[in-house]
Amino acid sequence: MKFAVIVFPGSNCDADCYHVVKEVIGQDADYVWHQDETFKTQYDCIVLPGGFSYGDYLRTGSIAKFSPIMNEVIKFANQGGLVLGICNGFQILTEAGLLPGALVRNKGLKFVCKDTFLKVENNETPFTLDYTQDQVIQVPVAHGEGAYVCDENTLEKLKANKQIVFRYSTSAGETFPECNFNGSSDNIAGIINKKGNVLGMMPHPERCAETILGNDLGKHVFTSIVSWLKGGGRNGE
Image (cartoon, rainbow, N blue to C red; front, side, top):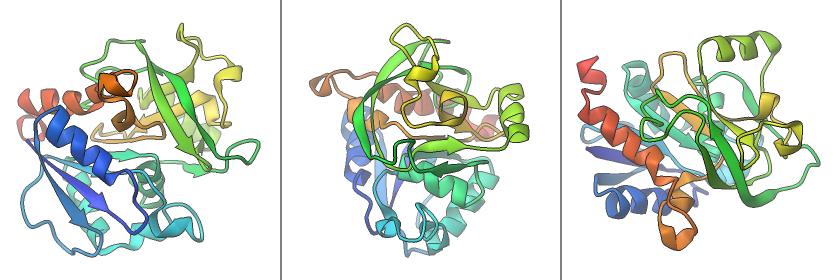
């Protein structure tokens, strides 16, 4: 399997994602520069990493969506290709219209960097096959504008279509309001598009993909992608 990690000015988790793909799960990967207008080879999954693309000027992700490579990312996604957006990557996906809703300033207006518990709400996506339903995992977060918001109609559609993939929770999987440290609608930490091939999540699975980092449960976001592709993938649907 071959992954592409998109690099924007200000990306700071691109090397982390590349390392997980290459060294942890043993797959091929390329860095792709934001000014490239086309993909020079065929990829199975595109990763938009965390960071501060274009310094988060104007609004997080709002400039990155105009990068030349994003035309190819959007085309790839619309053709059914797998796209994973982490933190700033999630913000870019909403700005580009590949996911509904938006990411806004955390409640309290402070940058939050800590470990948090996530409940796996849907383990039937290409990104969560290697988790069990309702499994609780501990994943780091590091964001200042990570509160996912959407209107009530969109939220109801997300629920009905099982598009909510991760929610902030307790260690026991309870999604109490107290766990919602950034003010996201309905404790949402990650969502998928209706077609099921584009995932955006604010927590950083690449930062907990090896036991030396405290736990390696984050790697299963990446191994799930490989499992899904080996099972047929978009070409076998």
